[in-house]
Figure 1: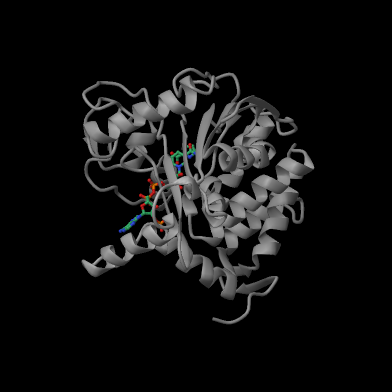
Figure 2: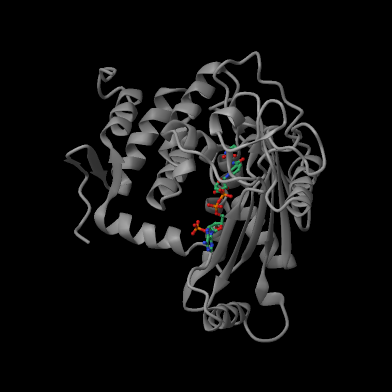
Length: 352
Ligand code: NDP
Ligand code: PYC
C-alpha cells in the first residue's frame, strides 16, 4: 500500500485522502444550506462510510442530502435541544435537523450518565437519519462502553404476514469493546436488503437475490426497479426480522416521540429523501458487571468463534477496507468526483 495523496487522478478513477474527501463534502453541505457544525458532522460521517467501503451510505447519498436540503424538508441549521430528564435518560429534540449533530450535542452527557449509573438512554426525536448506523455506536466501544442503537426510516417494508408496506428498513447497530483488537460491531437493516442497495442495483442494472422484495402487485420480484416503482421490500428472516423491525419502530419512534416510518408525508417536498423519524441509543458501562473484564470476555468469545472455523466477523470487511483506504487513499470514479466537485461549486456542470 502506497501513501495516500490529496487528490490524484488515475485513468477513470481518482484517489483522495480522507481529509480531502471530508473537506469536499463539508463544502457541499455548507453550500447547500447547513450550519458549519452540521456540515462538519455530516461530512465526517459520510467520508468515514466511504473510507470503510460502506458504499450504500457514503458519497452515493450526497445528491439525496442536497435535494432534501433544497426542498426545505430538513433544517440544516437546526440547533439540537438537549434535555437531562433522569439519572439514566437524555432526550434531544433535533429541531427537524439531522440526527448525528443531535447525538454529538448530547454525547458527553450520555457518557457521563452511563459511567455514573452503569446504563443510559439517549432518545432523539424530530430528526432525520440518512446514514449508516455503525458510526453512531463504534466510538462508544472505542471508549470501553457497550452501545446499541436503532433508527426507523420510511415505509417500504411489508410486515411478515401483511399485504402492504408499513415498516421502514429500520437498522440495528451494536458495538462492544474487545481486548487487544478492534471492537465487535454489527450494523444491519431489518429489511432483507437496505433501500440504498436496491437503488445501487437498479443503477447498475443488476438483479437481486430471491426473497428481497415484491412488485406493485405484491408479487415476488428480483427486479430492483420494480421494487422502487411501487413495489416494496420484505423483512430479513420472515417473522423474526419483522418482529425486530416492529421493535425498532417502538424504540426509535414511540419511545422517543419521533414519527413512525408511516407517519410523515414528504409529498409536498419534491426531492426530499431523508426520513423524519427518531433514534434511540442505549449505552452500558461494562466495568459495572461482575467477573472478568468484559473486553477480555468478548475477546474470548471471538477466539472460540475463530476456533470453530469462523473466518469473518461483522466489521472485519469494513476495518480491512479502512486500513486500505487510509494507506492508499479513497478511490472514487471520475464521474462521481466530478459530480461532487460540481456540487461543491469547484467546477461547472460536467458534460454528459
Ligand atoms: P449488510 O447486510 O451488508 O451487513 C450487515 C452486517 O453484517 C454488517 O455488520 C456486516 O459487516 C456484516 N456482514 C455482512 N456479511 C457478512 C459475512 N459474510 N460474515 C460476517 N458478517 C457479515 O448491511 P445492510 O445491507 O443490512 O445495511 C447496510 C447499511 O445500511 C447499514 O450501515 C445500515 O445502518 C444502513 N441503513 C441505514 C438506514 C437509515 O435509516 N439510516 C436504514 C437501513 C439501512 P461489514 O460491515 O464488515 O461487512
Ligand atoms: O438504505 O434503507 C436504507 C436507508 C433508509 C434511510 C437511509 N438509508
